[in-house]
Amino acid sequence: MSVFKRLAAIKLYFNLNNAVVIVAFLIAATWVWNTVIAIQRNFDLQQQVDKLAEQNAILELQNKTRMFENKYYQSNEYLELSAREHLNKVAPGERLLILPPNTVQPAANKQPVVADDIPITERSNFAQWVYFLFGKKS
Image 1 (tube, one colour):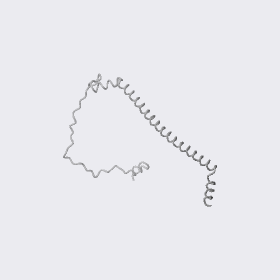
Image 2 (spheres, rainbow, N blue to C red):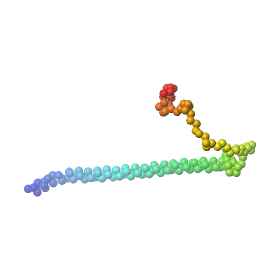
Image 3 (cartoon, rainbow, N blue to C red):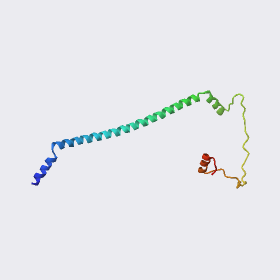
Image 4 (cartoon, rainbow, N blue to C red):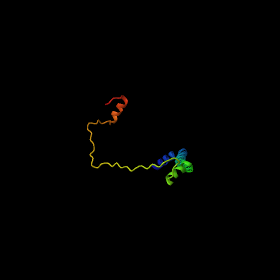
């Protein structure tokens, strides 16, 4: 008798409607899973595209910088500065000024000056704000 009850229960739960619902659920779950995988793949690809676009923009800026540098190196100003620096050339009317070496040496035996009577002008951050906002000393 119990075997017949079990078969009846199985027959009750495993009918055509439940089978259709299970198959529909599996199809929907597969569709959702594939959608999530496609979204993840698209996100990864978009990150790669953004990274390559950023690298492309950087390379374009470097290219423009090099073009401007080349124009500068071909300009008369650069040629003049380069000739002045490397060949020791001067423009007409200029004179060479040679300064004597710095002869002031700090004395090693001098004691540091301690001034107790000089007021300290540094203020705390709060005191600076009060002075700034109200014009008073705190």
